[in-house]
Image 1 (cartoon, rainbow, N blue to C red):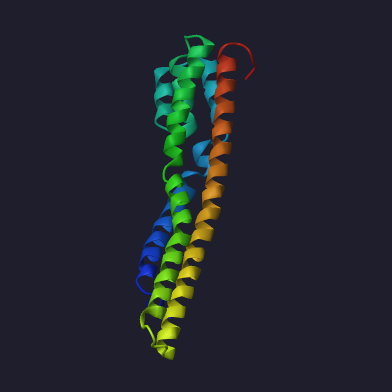
Image 2: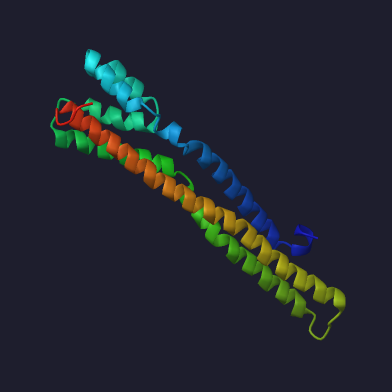
Length: 198
């Protein structure tokens, strides 16, 4: 029963499921909101700037820290320039950070799309086995072909459904994190240029 009954197509599905699971666990750890946007980081940065100005040590510490820290560091490196230059630097850094955060999320979406197709491949292989005997309709051959077809269809869906759920969840989380980082970076620019109170 299971993989043995499903035949060789199920090995491909097993590999896809292991890959999808690895991506889900890795991205779930990387995309934790508190890891990407630590609570209170912007307030700490603004308080330190109010006390001693923008120091190279502050910029370096932020640049080596969290994704939000790297975006804020890009703005602080250009704090003596115009608002537009600061915003450009922040946007460039933000794009680079988002590419890094997206990581293998696109691959997870591909695996979610491919899994049902691999299940369908197994179903077709099972049907071929079923009719391969020509006029032979022994109960064992019929059972083996039907089992292979149904197991592969089920395995394909079992892999695809959670992969698709997590893909959508990660895409939504990335959009929220990107929006939150952008808002905090804009607040930093506005405070430094005197348009807003910290």
